[in-house]
Image 1: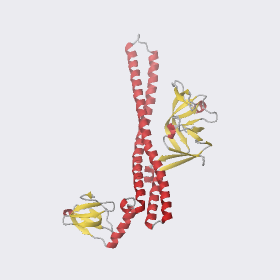
Image 2 (image 1 turned 30 degrees about the vertical axis):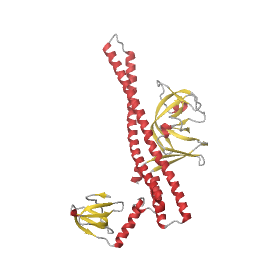
Image 3 (image 1 turned 45 degrees about the horizontal axis):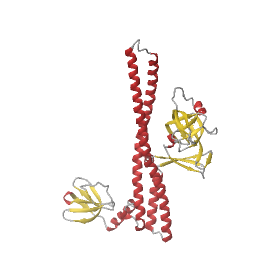
Image 4 (image 1 turned 30 degrees about the horizontal axis):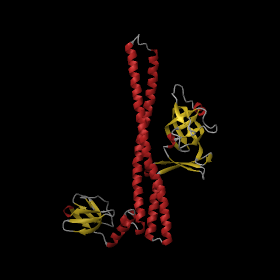
Amino acid sequence: MLFLWAFFCPFSLYADVIYLKNGRTLEGIIIEETEGKITLDLGFGTIIVKREGVKRIERATGQEEQSLQDKWKKEYFDSERFTPPRLKGLVSELNILSSKRDEAVRAESEIYQMERQNRKSTERIAQKKKELVEKNALLAQASPEENVQHYNELVTSINKLSAELVLLHDELIENRRKREETLRSVSGYFQSLSEFSDRMKRKRAELEKKGLSQEEDLFFLRVEERMREYRDEFHQNAISCENVSGRHVIVTAFINKQIKGSFLVDTGATVVTLSEKMALDLHLDLDGIEPVFVTLADGKNVPAKPVLLKSVQVGEARAENVQAVVLGQHLDGQIDGLLGMSFLRHFLVQISSKEGKLFLYSFDPEKRASD
């Protein structure tokens, strides 16, 4: 029971309306009155109003109160009060799903902020690396014998830049780790949404065999309407695959808005991998880049050069500032690279061998709210 001084509601022709002395109004159904208080049913709960704060009351007729009850059944169908007895369990699951959806919405907002921070960190790292190259070039030409102060200033500046780069890299890694954790909230909700939809269909089929009441039929219709709203918050990108073999598919990817290539979808690869030919076609400058070692599917550790791609697009699904590596002669000649998690982590991924398609889902609750 809620204890409130005032709760503002728009005027309704169906409800008892309590006009308060502070100028606000309450609407609902009066279920109890005493000398000092009035208990008002709001549909989703009750409130107690002190009579000393009431200016006047307009009372609804019995027929009007029934109309309001019917309205509440539609509006608050997911509350235990208005749920058909045989569907109490299902409505509990629906409310859990709605809570997961709220968590996913909060997570999506956090992911957006993390992406902005990651872009800023990436830009700062690129700038600091450029400054470091310039300072090292100056240091190579400097002589401590000729100008020891200038030489020491360069060394100090290089050490400071190196330390800043370490901190920025650590910050970027930590943000990406947090992003992965947060993204699991969205993917968990997506899975729960699919599972609940399946359970709801099975429950309806079960009750139809026993005889479905009109009240239960209306409940299922309202739940399905809610499910449609939830599903509409996910934007589906369906991409036709060039080749499907088990769980492995090859798709066309558009890199840096310049070059299209064939990429093997590899959820086991940490980053997007490019062939040397693709890197050459993209005019990527690999000079001076220190190689890193990556592990191939056969367990071999091979050198690769890390790069940052401006964009990767598959179908309508697009991600910016995507980490990648350029690999030597270790890729299958039929493909231009591997589509790894540095791109795929931006989406919920499903592969349908039967349909020969890759499905990439993006969660955008704000888009549905603006439609």
